[in-house]
Length: 251
Image (tube, rainbow, N blue to C red; front, side):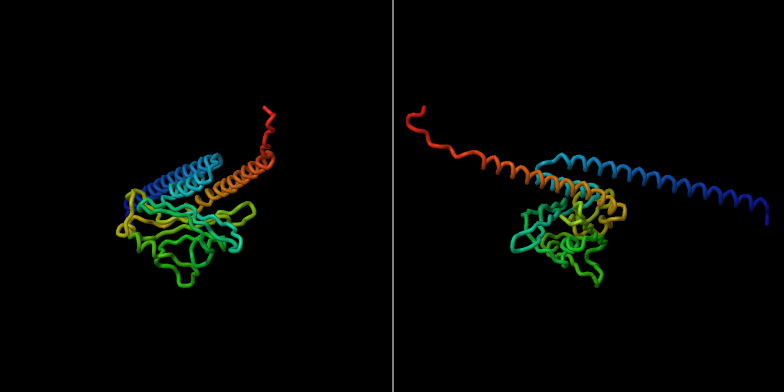
C-alpha cells in the first residue's frame, strides 16, 4: 500500500471525526441551551401562578402556558370534583384552540376509562399518543371523533397527563392536542395537520411534568384561599346581629 495514500486516508478520517464531534458538540450545546430556557420559563410560570387569586384566571393561565411551552395547537383542562349522589366526576373547566373559534361551556362529565382524560384520571398514567386515529387495538380508551367531524379539524398528536396533589391523588387532567413543528402556520387545517403536527417528544413530557407540580400547588392553594374567604365571610355575617328596630323615643 502506498504510504502517501495511507497518510491521506488517516488525515481524512481524523478530519471527519473532528467534524462529527464538532457538529455533535454544537447540537448538544443547542439542546442544553433550549432545555435551560424551557426550565427557566417553567420556573417563571410557577412564580406567576403562585400570585394569582382569581380561580378562573389561574386555570386559563395554566392551560395557556402549558400550550405555549409545548407548542400545542389546542388543549383542555379538567378538574375532579365530588358531587353528592354522583360520586367523583370531572369538570371540563377550560378549552382552547388556536385554529378554531369554538364556544365553550363548562360541563360535568363522568369518569370512564373510555375517554382519554377519564382514563388518566382513573389510572394516574400519562398518555403520549403520536396518531390519535391509529391507536393500538388493546387499549381501553378512544378519541371522540365527533369534534373533528363537526369542525373540520384533525386530531393527531396528544399528550394527556395528571395533576396530582401532595398525597399523590389526581385532582385534574391536562390534555394537549397537536404539537406544531417549528415554523408551522398559526392555524391548522385537516389538510395541513399531517405535515405540520409532530409528536410530543420525551423532553416535552418531562417539561410538562415539571409544570404540573407548581400548577397543582397553585390550584390547591387557590381553592383553599377561596374556601377560607367564604368561611370568613360566613363567620362575619353570622356575628353581625340583626338590626333592631328603634324605639320611637330613640333619636
